[in-house]
Length: 144
Ligand SMILES: [Zn+2]
Image (cartoon, rainbow, N blue to C red):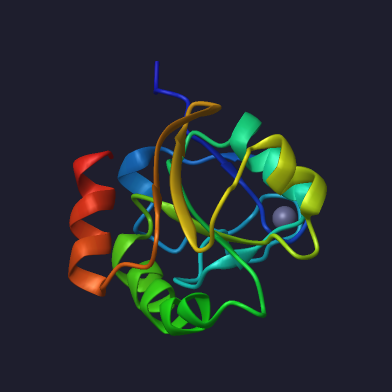
C-alpha cells in the first residue's frame, strides 16, 4: 500500500493524494487541474490557513507579516526565493496579520515577522525576526 501524502490545492481547496516520489513531477489538482505547486509563497486567510494546517501532509513554512512592517518587506523577496528552493519539501505560506488579526491573536503572534513551521497539524517551531536566505533554508531543513 502506498503511503498517503495529502496536498491541499491552493486554487480550490481539494485534497489530493500525491506520493512523495511524484512531488517533483509538477503534479496538478485532480479536481480543478491547476498546478499544486508553483514555487511561490501562497497568501492565505484564516480559513485557508486552518485547512492547510489540518489537512496537508506537506510541512508548512509560514511567514506572519504585515504591510506596515519594514523588516517584513525586506523578508518578502527572501521568502519568495526560499519557496523556489524548498518546494516540494515544504509549502511556503504567508499570513497578513493586519488582515487576519483573529488568527494572529489565537496563535499569539507577538512580533513580526514571525516564521513558524507546521507539521501534521501542529506548530513545531517558531522564530521571531527576519532571516537571510541561507539561514532560512538551513533552519527549515533542520525541522523538516
Ligand atoms: Zn484544485
